[in-house]
Image (tube, rainbow, N blue to C red; front, side, top):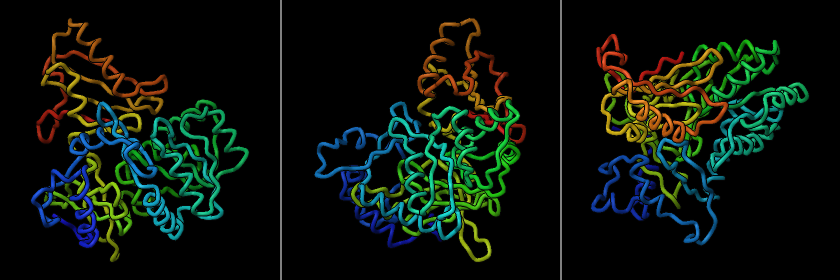
Length: 391
């Protein structure tokens, strides 16, 4: 089902580019109308991306890494000029909306490592808005973040909610505070408890949000103070909602009209959303991830990929919680003999590897339990594979 945010011209353009490209060609053989084409996800693109070589290209590309929801995170190539065009269009809208401007001084705590380059993307957007960026990155020491904020008095604090929350806890432990009136986040859901903590620690008055991903770049933005969860979108990115429920929520499917050299057509990023109209303006309303993926320590993971580590145990549950220090914690409950310490240790080691576990990451544990220890939804009485208790 295509919703009102879709643009038929964008869809046709993306379809024509995709049917000629090796990433999509085989899947679209015999299909002559974009409306009959199937949606795809990361697993569908995996063979083409793994076979891709930059040495086969006549000119350079921009490479960006997916967040890690496959055992080998995907590397997406993007045409450099097309990438710049999308950022220019987004920066223009951010400036018009008042997110960034010439008086903006932003303390940038987004991440930049292993081709995962959100911090650099935000630096670029800020500079396109004639703003000043304080590029510390998520890997800076908290003492350095605090010192930079004291010296330069930023107007904006930007980063993922989990990193900003850790920074806030660091300051709270030292009875420190800052006055940074505006905050921008992306990459994760901002939960109410985290929002309240950030407001108290940083004196935040205005909250903004960005939405996008490695596959499609950033293409949506939200005034999370006035309209939390509602995103305006770039018109060159067509939005579809597949299999909507009675409330209009369904799988988000996108086609990026900026991407011609490496097309992105009818791509499912794994999020659930719907289209709403508020005061005559259409917005994309996001509800979160689908039932087959989850976020942990800023990164999204596909359930099918993680479940392959469990040695064919069909009965398991992933439980997500927030620690008292604000960190994400994950528990894997595996229905098995509780005395099988070898199984527990093997699975735990695999989880720590796939979750890119570091000393600063949240807790990871594996528990071998009887089936009745799994959480059951009190409404549906079902046993979900993912139980998220974070608030």
